[in-house]
Length: 198
Image (cartoon, rainbow, N blue to C red):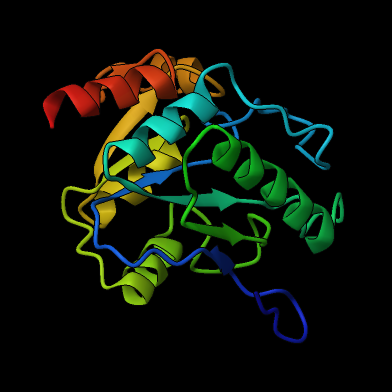
């Protein structure tokens, strides 16, 4: 995992898998772990939503490769650094592995809302980088989020947006009552729907 000089560039963590499998894209805060308006700043604050780790293990068992694409503006705001973010992601990856799953890639935007980057959702830069890195065709790839910007970014690149009610999901649903996307109680519920459709 490399970081350039100056402001950090969007980057990712990769775990190789030898076998081609379908992809799924997940937001992090509010989908996998509990969110906070004060930001998630340390591994101790990174607490998985009930059943989310099990859901990711289920995805792996049913042949999905998992990518996480997440805005992490707390870095630009000076609330935590790259080492803390890496420690949070180590915790997430370890929990998923212990449950029998595998987290294949993590992409994050470290910028703030006024930095003018192309990677902060609803912009699509991280999705495009993911597609370049993996050769994945984004069309129809399930992309699960809790915020409207997650859905916007996913739809803009041809993914299949899915909303969960955890995190900011209920607020998103209330603010956009006519969303043309399926809504699920949580990540586990969404994953069970995908598996049943397979």
